Image 1: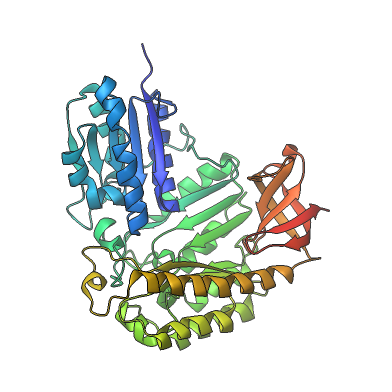
Image 2: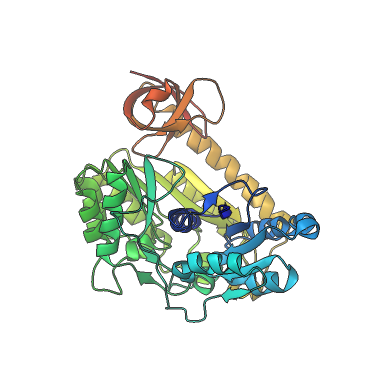
Length: 442
């Protein structure tokens, strides 16, 4: 019997990667073969809809199948994830080869649905979310299944889905639904499965990871401590945190548990209190700064990153300068910056005071130039220091070069044998760039 062949293409955040890995794991366990898209009977596209650029990429990708479909009516396409929740019905109506659309809260139904459109190629399945609190999870029997993933040594675990905060610029609550914590039993079982399969570093994922447990009578500090103390785990990370829910008990677990990495992504989004209020962010700059100072006082060598938007509707020169001053004062190791882009259905999309796109991009370039200088200065200060690095793969460029990350989440490039993959090695930093460190194994 000819093997059923599938291909998975992921555009987006770690949560999309995580969801796609779970689906490919189940399909493989059912006898499907993962192949290139040219050979596939079904291509599953999982995408992000947080930014307009990612959405445009998926539309473009879908259009590329027109030629092959006209020739031999293959492959069939399944569009999944938050991008499907946003554009799924349009894609289903526009492209004859899109046979399945499924929102992120129907991941548990995806393997059966994919098999159904394979068995009945003319069928069309719509699994878009209608209840914002409904969730169909996809769990595994840890004795019989190994979760497929790109990296043998590092893995993600989603601990909560959705968001209840409704920041005015953000599409997430509309496409991923309301906040729901996973049960701790599911999380622990999955973590132990991964550790038994050789994973040395686990990253806990959530739109608001430190809001975990609010809906089930638990809290994130408790979960983080439990995960950090699992037998066999070497490193634990988490993303992304919400400033108002990032509390001292979490900081204390980070400081006291050796396996919890001294790295933190805490999105600030703006340095202006006026803009933060328009964004419906529930903290002030002063409150944010206080938490950063407390964290740094308890965790020396903290690696601190953030997310920041420029060009939000109504942003004045004064507001923008407040964000620039925040970078100068706080000195983040890295800033994930973006020019504001309208997302239909969010309150900010219809706010007065929309800035011209060229002004947004100009401000973004100005901010990035400042941050590049700060990042380079911080990295150069690490020259001569020795860090323990988990060797997680070959470097993207250069013969006999490997890469890994320090506990504070700095990328390090160094020479070494592939026998070091998956090992912890001590690396002395010899030079620095804005995007990475270079070193030698000691």
